[in-house]
Amino acid sequence: MFKILLPLVCLVLAAPVQAVTFKIATLSPEGSSWMKLLRQHAKAIGDQTDGEVKFKFYPGGVMGDDKAVMRKMRVGQLHGAVITAGGLAQRYGDIAVYNMPMMFRNEAEIDHVRATMDDVLMAGLRQNKFVGFGFAEVGFAYPMSQVAASAIVDVRKRKVWVPDNDPASLRAFEAFKIAPIPLPIADVLAGLQTGLIDSIASPPVGAIALQWYTQIEHAIDLPLMYVYGLFTIGERPFNRLSPDHREIVERELRAAVGAADGSARRDHESAKAALTNQGINWITPSDTELQDWNGLASAARQRVVDSGLVTADVYSQIEMLLTDFRAGAR
Image (cartoon, rainbow, N blue to C red; front, top):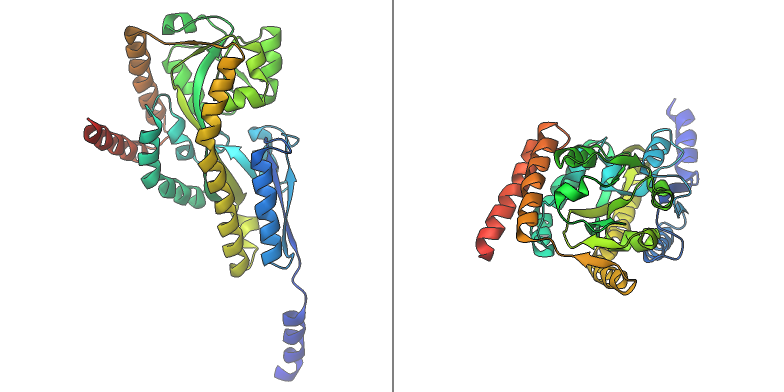
């Protein structure tokens, strides 16, 4: 029997390893800094694996919004994506914890919390059958509108957009007593042009890249939420790689995401200045208005936790980190 099996084993061991091609979707357009990084590190992976691991990218949202991309990942049409945290929230709610309303006051607080919590959230993502390679900051989202309004009572009168696949944002707006209009990201520009919506919350980078700024006249200088994305691949296709190839892929993709994250803050400030140069009027809320926003934001965050969309354990860890940091900053 051994003499019969030995040639078969030798044939299997000698068989060439089949190349693996990961199909990856992203909203980032071709030629953007994100796409340049992705292609650069995909080439490095190919070089280090002798062409056995390849990537095919679908940029510019050609595979649809986050909701459509997640559906295509479930059926195997796609293997991964560069996606917003909200896009993954229905599979793993804690992944969107950082963009609960007015969680952070400034970038220093973000850096302090992320130094501890990024690894916690990546581990939780893995437990939910996704392999993540780190977070990439987009920046603070600010309320923007076609009508000047900084008081919460005035914002409630506006037709405010909310992503249609983001239950945490929907709950947050409800706590602000704002009745938002859910739309896919691809429909936001048309919604602003036709009057279906007249207000959004967006990072300056997103408002420029998606041309939303052309339909906006005013912005409140209020960091409403922290927006970020991540590169993730489904655990099943990732585990088809050999251990050596997994190590290479993880190292290179973490480097790509890290590079994007590292340049984001500079891009955010440049985009904010560009909006000003385009004539956007930045409104500074009064102390009373700011107090109203903060009080409702705190209630909104608690509502998200009470609903189970974000676990109390993860939220309390962040709360403790922020409390300690703010005490030391006094």
